[in-house]
Image 1: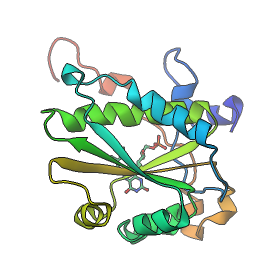
Image 2 (image 1 turned 180 degrees about the horizontal axis):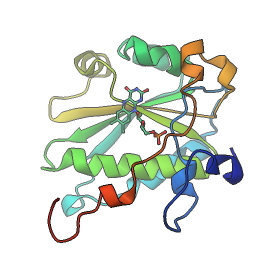
Image 3 (image 1 turned 90 degrees about the vertical axis):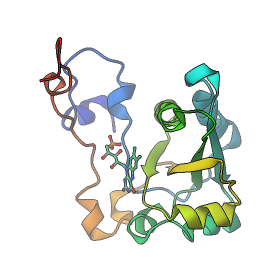
Image 4 (image 1 turned 30 degrees about the vertical axis):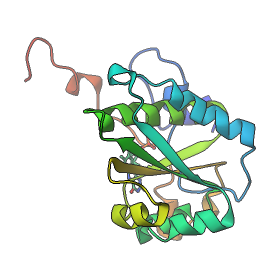
Length: 188
Ligand SMILES: Cc1cc2nc3c(=O)[nH]c(=O)nc-3n(C[C@H](O)[C@H](O)[C@H](O)COP(=O)(O)O)c2cc1C
């Protein structure tokens, strides 16, 4: 989607880098491999996220082969599987509980990752809809890590590739006005 097309869906109230509007979470993916060096640029961006005491609590378990992706498909819930099964890369973001604010910090890593992905022409879509305990077991994730989200990464596909009910939802979402988010002096 070019900038003009995006303007039909999203308009910033103030001047920001276009990448913030251009990143969104589509559900249609092409069955097309992501080159190693492109994918690593995405995780490199996550690496530079800030964290409390620079603890960098985030880790990613990634799946690219058919065999590994099938493992992920076994714990992703049906509502998500029906669109993310074509995504060439799936990653689960886990966070080390030793960092008191591990969830907050790993959210920053996801934010950096998703923006860098948009920058290199990749789509991303985070999912909370997966069976965390099953994922822990299947991927051998120790108890000192929390499982946050599964992230689909890949090149955006044609809308026609989606089930009919998801086609109408396949567009960038809006945001509430900034004035409803910022409170001057005290919460109102
Ligand atoms: C923590 C988290 C969990 C999410 N879980 C799901 C999910 O299970 N399924 C889904 O389709 N989208 C999921 N989403 C995507 C959000 O619905 C989406 O980011 C939000 O509607 C804003 O749209 P945008 O990312 O296109 O700007 C999740 C996003 C986040 C950050």
